[in-house]
Amino acid sequence: MDQSAPTVHRGRFRRFADFYPYYLEEHRNPVCRRLHVIGTSLVLVSVVIAIASRNAWWLLAAPLAGYGFAWIGHFGFEKNRPATFSHPWYSLLGDFALFRDVLLRRRKF
Image (cartoon, rainbow, N blue to C red; front, side):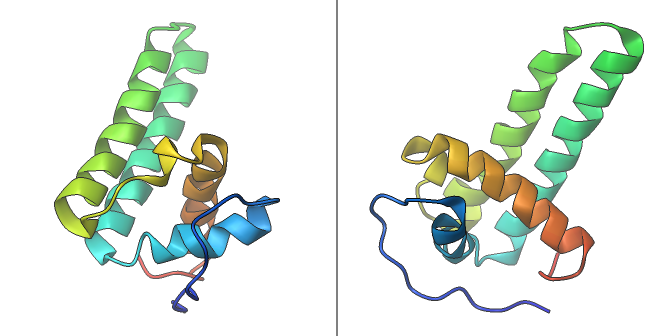
C-alpha cells in the first residue's frame, strides 16, 4: 500500500518521525524509489561481504553504491536535490525506513 506523503515544511526537524513524511514526498517517482532500494540492498551486501571476508575494502563500496544509486534517482528521475545534503542522518535513516517499508509492502517498489 503506497500512501501519498503530505506536504510538509522543508526546515528543521525535531525527530525522524517528523522528517519521514518529507522524505517520502521527495521520493514520489517510482524509479527513484527503486534505485534507493537497490542502492540500500547493495550497501547491506557490501557490509556483509566485508564482515564475511574480513576485508574492509568492501566498506568503500557501501557509500558508493548507496549514494550512487540514490543520486541517480534524484538527479535523473525525481529532479530534486537529495535530502542527504541538508539532513544527512535523517536521510540515511529514511533510506533504511523506505527499504523496510518496501520489504513489508507498506510502500510500492
